[in-house]
Length: 391
Length: 234
Image (cartoon, rainbow over all chains, first blue to last red; front, top):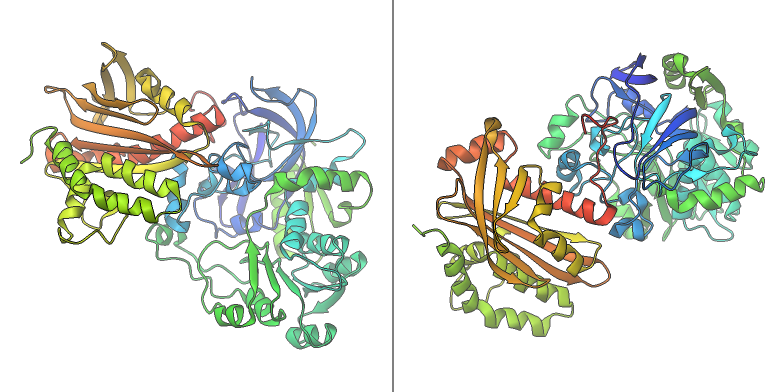
């Protein structure tokens, strides 16, 4: 099969790889019909995520047709499914609590050592996202082996086109959980840092959840325009002093909840030798999490801080004093995708949520490297890239 | 130098010595699993309990209820290396016990055990992978068994490896079962053997941790997780 593979910083290629097979009883094989490049794939592209090996297949936002099933899979050949980026067994302590992204069993045993050292506990398995999270071949490929296929994939009706449902795999539930974690109440002002895909979906979700006003913060004019089209007010941080503007726009109170949909990516993650440092438990010099610091300073007393943005290491100059003295709550985590997919699919079907506005470019899988380069270099115009294998 | 088996007995005595204090924990503890853990672990890790006890004043009650194997000094006892780890498995205690008690199931989740041959209900021969492609046979005998709660085994004299181990099962209300496995062994060729084994990741500490996790996966999900996309390399 053809697949997009990682070979080093800013070096991804489309290679011919062996087709995946059913390995375990609960597996299914999916023939990918649509797959997207995620903002978090750019961390891999920039070479800042530890545990990548040359030849690893990327991609964790994908959907397609079931073409093979193991004896314990509940899927049927021919079904169209969207596959969550988080791999979850469905039966451990965490999965039973619907904390699917904390699944205890989905990261292979021999891959757990690194994150156990880095984070104190082994993280769960994710598709196409380094050997820290299991080393699973990802979905930017013609075929994918999907473990625990009775738990993760959600079957979608034929009437809904790929582009309407593809983002159930990650960014739509991630934006939704970001708003959910902000615990929005009527009358609330919610400020969202970053109007990329997750930020935009967080804005959309916060409005559905009843926020009085949502304020999107970015510097790309086109992305701010997309936020405004959703019904958000906007701040261009290149033109405006963000903290003062937020105070003025919230009646001098400050936002009730803040969402950091930026993460480590925009301001770097200083890490030539992250893997070694992690092993030594020394850590990571991620000293420019500007958005998160600004959000914590801006949020009102007793407010909520929601962090869907990806972080991987340690943070300097974290305003812990502001957290404590203002009595803030902080909620974060990889998305518990399976908790939200059914409800969000329903909302898409009802026309309450549209995700297609985000897609700026559609390319054949073979042009994947071009998609990465442009998504990385031209963020204003390239808001979301969907790749089509076999075209 | 303790003879084979002495450490467990000696440690047991030492543990008995501390039993009143452990009961003291019972009366203060609101969480039954704390006590079960304390007793289970205490019984199981006799050697390390003994060692930890020696580090404390014998006239005072212990001020540290952590299992002895987490002591900063150790874990060893004489020539024996002791390792142990607990895991919570979301299954009923008796199911887990039954699966483990059938030693022929062990190769399903213990990578290094190539096969287990039963000689009688208490005695079995384990064929274990050793570094550099070698295999060693260990004849083990069940020396203690409490239905649904505990299995302890020991290698018979003359085995290639001098080892003993215990696995305990205790209820974790609402969460399944806490399974604690403790293995003590005398490395072949002493310290050198241990270092060689570690280099090849067959050192019991690493092995034990990974095997317990594989046991958990198999019991909770019915399979052992792999990210390999092809069967032949699985």
